[in-house]
Every structure is written in structure tokens, then in C-alpha cells.
Length: 282
Image (cartoon, rainbow, N blue to C red; front, side, top):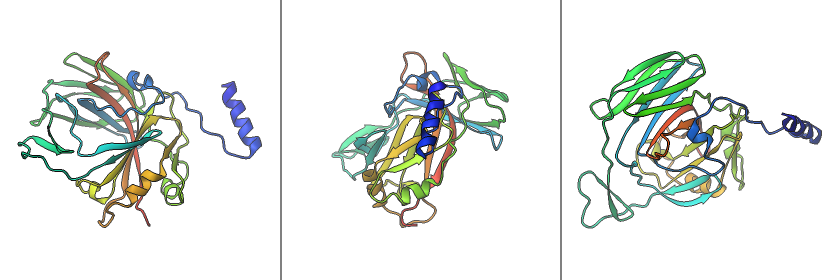
């Protein structure tokens, strides 16, 4: 605490606002142990609980599978905590079979979902038994007004992570990107949480409408109160297709995560969801 106070005093004396110091706010054992490097791993199963305490709502959604989800985009460059994902139309000879996707000239099989039976979901304001639907997906909603621990148990799983609130943006993120000139874009927020992580996904109008955009941006890293998005990535994204309406929304999630010990195939995440609207040229 003394070092944080000295940092604030030095910032005041220099006439600049202090960087926010991450405060305790629960954790998840997986995310707390990752460190400063971005985590772009793709688990076979990702069960996510999104909570909006200000609206009194929470939801659970996800599925188990025998492999990671297929991606039509491939990583072409990585800078800092962000990576550029690009898609180039390709063909496979012979044609891919049903249930396969042609990616970079190779036929890849879609993973099969796995039935792991009923899951017990509990949080400070309630608990539910969540059963897989006809497509082996898990989905449920509930009321939530209290921060605390969220658990998922069943079929050998016992996972726990804390509810986390969304990031509180400092200034306008849209203006920060639009007014950056030829510099990197910087998103800042005032309430970083110790041991939490953040995840950003940006796409153009084609991606927003379910198509395959030429370029997308993904960022992931520790919750420090700041995320730097490379200008070169934003320039490629802005050169995409923005000719449609109802697009320009981008996803920014702050989260905690838990995983079974020694198992990289399952991830349980509690998310404080937020986002922002950025449409180039507006």
C-alpha cells in the first residue's frame, strides 16, 4: 500500500493522473496463475457465466466437446497482448466432407459435442441444475445482485471463480481509437481487479453479420487498467467491409477462470461483460 501511495503522490506532483492500482476482487485459480503473457489457448470446453449486477441478471452458457472449435481465421502476427487474425478464401482438393471445414487448403473436422450430464450451477443468489439440451449445449439464466463465488460441479468437475464487474471506461474508447492518428489505440479503465484478465474481440461489418471478415483483432492479458491495440492491426481492420448497417460493436470482457487441475481441455469463466461501439470514419 505504501508503494501505491508514493506512486499517486509522484503522479500528482508531476501533474499527470495516476495509473489505477488493481484492487482485490476475487479470483479464479487458472487466470490468477497465467502471468503477463496473453492466453490464446483454445480449450475443448468453455462454460461461461456472465453477470450484470447492475441489472440483477446472470446467465450460463457453453458446451463440452472432444476438441477445440474450428477457426476460419488464422493468426498472422502478434504484437504485445494482441494478435491479428486473417482469413483468405481457400479451396481443398478433394472437396471437404460434411462436418469438415477447409482452412488454408486443409480439411479439418468440426469437434463433436460431449454429453457430460447435469451440471450444478450455484452463485450467491441462487442455484440451478442445468441439463444439456438436444444439441448438448448448456444454457440457463438467473437473478443476481450480490458479488461472491460461482461454482460448477458435476461429472467429476468442481470448479469455482468469483463474480466480476465490468470495466469502467476512462473517457471514450471510441474517441481514443478515432483520434489516435498513426499511434496505437489505448483503452483505459479506472477499476482494474487483481488477478483478473481482459479479452477483446474486434471485427468489421461482415464479421458482425456472421460472415468471414478479412481481418479481426483479438487481445488478451492481465487486468492492469490499460490495453494497447497496435495501430497496424487497427488500420487493417478499418480497411475491411464497413458498408452494412447495425455493426461496429466490439466485445470487451473482464473475467476470472478456473480449470480442472492438470486438464487444459475445460475452462470455467466468470465474466463482467462490456463493450464499445467503434465504426471507422464516424
